[in-house]
Structures are given as structure tokens and as C-alpha cells.
Image 1 (cartoon, rainbow, N blue to C red):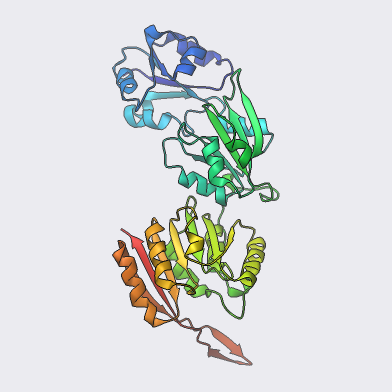
Image 2: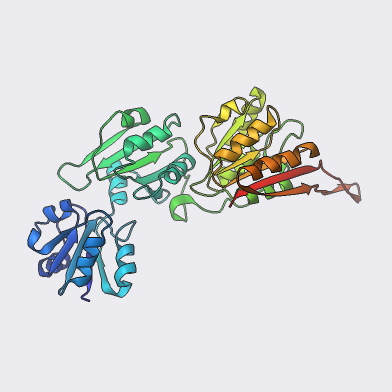
Length: 400
């Protein structure tokens, strides 16, 4: 078939190369607004609608040059991937314009090398929301079903600032700055990009990697990296196994139930996940907040007793239960029902290991139980001895 030229449009006049390709095209495919903006008549155009199958068939059957019009940079969360899969990369000639994300940050006057870009367009939006919970600077490509108001509603109460960039590059362009309540109360039109910023956090100085998602360095940190009460903390070796079973990463949300010092929640946040710490003891909550601040992550602390404190929390991908106060079986049942991927428990009493495993299995999780006892070697004068730490049982369930 003929070469397909994919031309990005950001509202500015096309460059000479793009204009020549558009003029000579036998068929031009694109959204209604792009076709209208560039004056392409219906006699040689096809409008992108639905799943695009009709337009793709027309493109494949065209007997002359084809131009596909798209927003901004069509290789960035755009149609280039779909066209390459259908017609082959060698068939495409891509002429990008300025991406909508770059334009949005430019309009806001904010640098964006440390920003994460996520898409809620044609995708489940919860992962995009979780990245906004975890990262201090995020650009969200919205959709008709999940626009600025829905995004702001999901993040309400977290203190984020919003920049909504609507109809960028057009005569009706609008850029609005406000908080979640203001964005929720307004009507928005497509297309738009939303910048979500935690103004109290961010990259200090020059970075070296776009998005800021560099390696956190060590994980399963030593206990002295956290303020805790009389050794009441998930020990480093246990935490290493717990983290491996939780599998936290960007787009995930993890609950840390009975969080204590918050070591597990904080480690999950350092690995890129969003995390919520639930703790009933006010003194522990105060220590937990200090630990959060020390490690420079964003972990909301819910001061309350499970299971009641869990019922209104957003759906988690993984749950860690470290504290065993309250109605144990009810807490485990609720976590097993709500968790999308895994539930991990650290237990000190053998009597709870088998019942916990049965609860998880009854709710469709594949269960693994382990007994852990680490014995660090410590110096005593010129000698060294093994100092056994408290034993712990780790019960994990993974949804298959």
C-alpha cells in the first residue's frame, strides 16, 4: 500500500512538508475537529469513529497517498502505535507537532522533566489516579468518561493543585488553575490535559532521568531508618519478604493496616506505589507522620481502628496487615475481598496462621506461609555472637 503520513496538529499552521502531503493526499483520516480545522472536505476524508475499524479499512484500501491527522505528537500516547501494528512501521511517515502535555506545562510555566505522564483515555483510570496519589507532578490525559471533575473528585482531600488545559492551540483554549473542589464544580470540554501537582514536594536541583522515577537505592531498610516504639516495627528481613509478596510499583495502591511505624507503607511509596497507612494508636500515628516526612514520600495516615477505618478507602491492589489488634478474622476477610492482587500478613502467634490461610483461600487467593527468624551477627568486644530476633510467620495470598 502507499505510504501513510501521520501529521500532528497543535493548532498552529502546518509546516511546508506537512501542508504539501495534506494537499496531495487521496484520503485524509482524522477526527472531525482536525478535518474541519484544516479544511478537508468530505469527498476525500474519513472520520475517526468508534473503534476506528472502518477508518482503518478505508486507509488500507486507499489507492493513493494517505494522511492521518492527529493531536500534537501522534507518537506519544497517540495513533502511531495502532497504525504501525496494522500497516507496519516502514509504511509510516510521522510529522509531529508539540504534544498536548508539553503545551499544558508551557501554559502553566512549569518545567516537566520530572513529571510523570499517564493516560486514562480508553484505559481503567484507577492506575492513573494512584500515580497522582504517589507522585508530586503528574500529567493526566483524560477521556470523555473520566475528565477533570472525576479526577479531582478521586483526589479530593489530598491537597493537590490542578491545572486544566482545555482545547489547547485552538481559539477556545482555556487554562484553569485551582484546587480539587473548584475543578469538581466546573464543566469541562474535550480535549483536555490535567496537571496534578503537590506543591509541597518535588525534585530539588537538577535531575538525570525524566519522570523522576529513579531507583530508591536500598530497600528493606534497617530499623534505625525509622522512628519506632520499643522495637515494634516489621524487621528488615521480614519486610524484604513482605515487599516481594506485595509487589508495589507505579500505579498500585497498598494498604498498610496496623501500620505502627509505617515502615512497610513508606517502603512501598519509595518503590513508586501509592500507600495508605491505617493505625489506631495516636502516638504511633505521630511517629508514623514523622517517618513519612523523613523519607520524603506521600503516605496519608488514617487514624482509626480496622475494619471500620478500611471501609471507605479506595480499592487496593495489595494489603499488608502488620498489627493484629481488633477483630482479626473480620479484618482479614475484608482485606481479602477488597485486594485486587495480594494480601500479606505478619503474625507472631501460630494460632492465627492456619485460620488466616483458610480465609484467604476461601476468597480465591493462592496461599503461601513461611516461618522467619533472622539472626544477625553482632560484635561483643573482640568476639561475635548470633543474636536471634523475634520469630514471625508471614502468610501471603495472591489472586490467581
